[in-house]
Image (cartoon, rainbow, N blue to C red; front, side, top):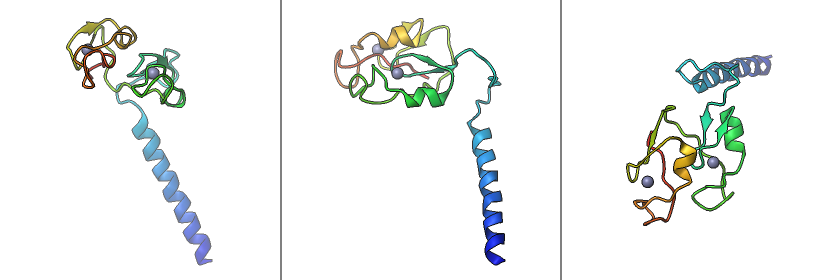
Length: 119
Ligand SMILES: [Zn+2]
Ligand SMILES: [Zn+2]
């Protein structure tokens, strides 16, 4: 009997955590879940995804460790009309265009990596 109660209270607590977790994961900017427009960008390659789950489950051709050596990384900044490289300050119309170019002020060295969007 005692066991049964603790299992029940544990699952209630787990469900509560789950609710907290999922509501905390939702963007606070009113981005509708049902929206068909992809709103998640990869910080490395600028590719758009419909969800963070899709983004983080695929490998990235512009991963800093090498092509497809790791998964896409969520760009956590806001959507902008132009993006600024956080290393050199150069502006680009999209993350995709930005990360396609090599950065002269990259921390690993001149042209040792791609531009990276500031948040
Ligand atoms: Zn990517
Ligand atoms: Zn740059």
